[in-house]
Amino acid sequence: MAGRRPELTVHGGGIFGLSVAWTCLRAGAAVRVVDRARIGAGSSGGLVGALAPHVPENWNPKKAFQLDSLLMAERFWAGVAAAGGVDPGYARTGRWQPLADAAARDLAQARAAGAGALWRGQAVWRVIPAPPGDWTPRSATGLLVEDTLSARLSPRAAGAALAAAIRAGGGQVEEGIEAKDGPGLHLWATGAAGLADLARDLGRTVGTGIKGQAALMRPVLPVADLPQLFVEGLHIVPHADGTVAIGSTTEREFAAPDTTDDQLDALIAAARAACPALADAPVIDRWAGLRPRARSRAPMLGPWPGRPGHFIANGGFKIGFGMAPKVAEVMAALMLEGRDAIPAGFRVEDSL
Image (tube, rainbow, N blue to C red; front, top):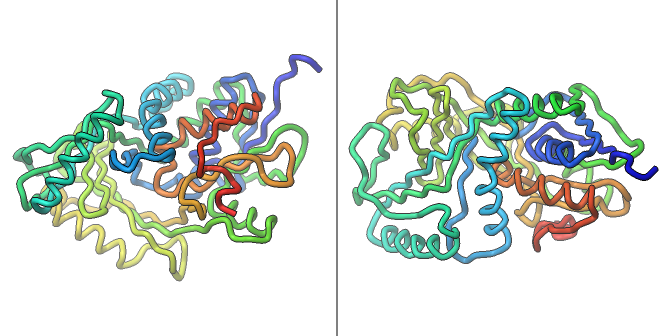
């Protein structure tokens, strides 16, 4: 019937599923989100919430897509908060990275020029003297890289905010439900389990789950408005509630996917050594889970091969929250309008 609202069932209550559902709802679709466990049961229920850019060099479609998404994020999350009344904890507070030696300084300065050319004047990457204070990470050169593009949000609050916005807009969000098939369009955004389901259907590996561990600390220092830190691969992210998230490990081999161990203890020790404000901060939460990584290492987006009306949004390994606004935009365009704006390297077939 002409004018009938498209019907969309989103399988998976993680960041990709909820973001696409929200964007499709705003575009006029009738939306139902179902999750076999609960909202944020997988990697989207973690602790870190670092929305950090790739370095501004060796530019490629993945980096350009991420830049678009990071620049969309403030408006996206403000709209979510306004619609549902739940704060996702978003703030573009920037990031500091210590520079270990003269070579690191020179590379950072070259990247500053790259940011000037590639970031469209919307953010900067620059070398600054390390300011005094207990939040400043230890730096052998006394210098830091500062970027003003990095942002943060609270993963669990972001999931709750999206669910609230979808419900407020007339969509459905159901937990403890595993819907199989039915009328309308279907989006499968089911994380590591979804990669395994797709692999079984296609008879080949398309990606895997990589275990990560993270911790939450509560320092005495007020941190809500401070920049996040990135020290030798470790994310240190201050949140609006005064906590600081530390993460994460990258484990391809593990005994259990959802338990923490001494590898997390090593991260906590590294954070205490890097940032004086965390030296005596208590650990108040620990998390472990599987993060979905597609074989292409980019998000996996597009139609499910051989299943008309079924689509995939998966593989947001480490960058899912930062990529979510743009992923939602291109998947809504594909499913509701038939307009394909998926960049090279992001298609399902790129991981086959």
